Image (cartoon, rainbow, N blue to C red; front, side):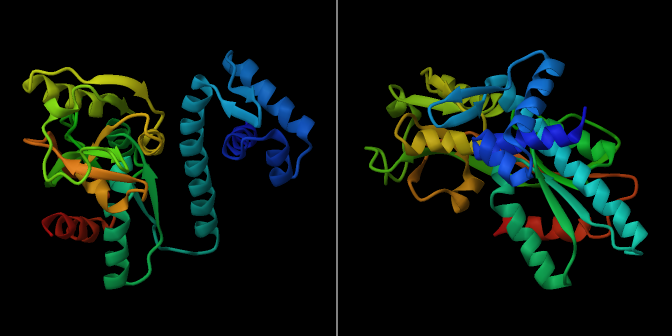
Length: 294
């Protein structure tokens, strides 16, 4: 497949408009329409649907968009790496992966502290689910990934080295003004009548397991495509959600959190390749460990 077409599709999704995407890409609208139509024929599924103010991805289109963004980022990195070799740049960028909640706050902060301590360094950050990040470390796409043992857990693999950083208690995120907002602790039984939203199977499994121990069954009636969509549904008052505690430092201002009694938790780990580790990986792991210790 032509990555130019993938880039056109991702741009259309980001802007929500064929005409706006065409203007940004310096193509005609008809050319962009033909590119998307050709992509849909190749995949055998509709990727976009029209609405009153433009277009948005279908469920299949949203799945493809997430993978396309990751692929395009990797392609851009490949081009930059080749140009660095051509231009005699010897420094190897540090490619970091992290789950969405960790990529939203604690990992960028740790990199900031590393740069302040050791000086400038080229680096990149790729958010993803733990199992996908593990595969990218094994494949050599990532030098370091920060992952969790939330269901389905982490697989044993002699090709990577795993280091434990700490435990992370999950919390409940609520819309502003929610009756349970501001409480020191809340039992999950008190939330039995609430509607929950989830964005991945691992988080949903933690919620169901925690609720089952308390003898209740959560109403997970809404599903979000990603963490941002999950928080948007909470902010709009449609649902409440279980989120990682490490995310509380980077939440949007129109939601609030409350801790749970005997909360579910997950372990946080770094994984690095055993062969050819990046020279700066150990230093970043040290900064991450310090962040969790504090």
